[in-house]
Length: 222
Image 1 (spheres, rainbow, N blue to C red):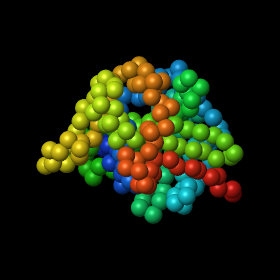
Image 2 (tube, one colour; image 1 turned 90 degrees about the horizontal axis):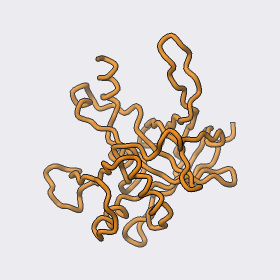
Image 3 (cartoon, rainbow, N blue to C red; image 1 turned 45 degrees about the vertical axis):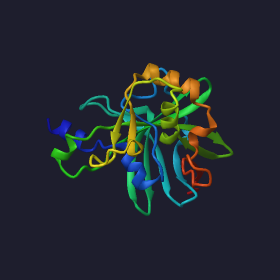
């Protein structure tokens, strides 16, 4: 029971974390993973210590998978990602997967304090989706923009299970609600295959705004 309480305590809304730590906007979020175990791959070239244009430090390591209390952990296919900037630090568990020749990362929060156990029982972890590029010794991460997704829904261009949840329960403005995809992984992957290459997916809704959805990482040489 104590283990479950600690786990739930460290699960928090990924969107709210990224709003605070990294991005000016909101991300496409899902209750279910965007990947299946068969899709997951591991590329060692992602591991290392990296920095971005804002001098934030990204430490990407191979995740060690538990094999039981009495056994040693073994290297898994996932990544432990530590992100630190002037606002603070956060850690994530990320899975790299491939669909139709494109690389994607599924991010989920790892160790995020919710204050106490009672608060932890009310938190629900979500996944976020980013496209990944590897070229010239750099990593390009492009998160999908929730405003782009909302526009698709508002124009009835897509039908996929979702909920709209207010960021602030005291504000009932539809434009201030976040979208949480509730579809199955199979449905999510159909969505990715159809819209994954849309260049508008990574841009801010208003021209001239700081997009903020693309991060280029350069390796720090030790």
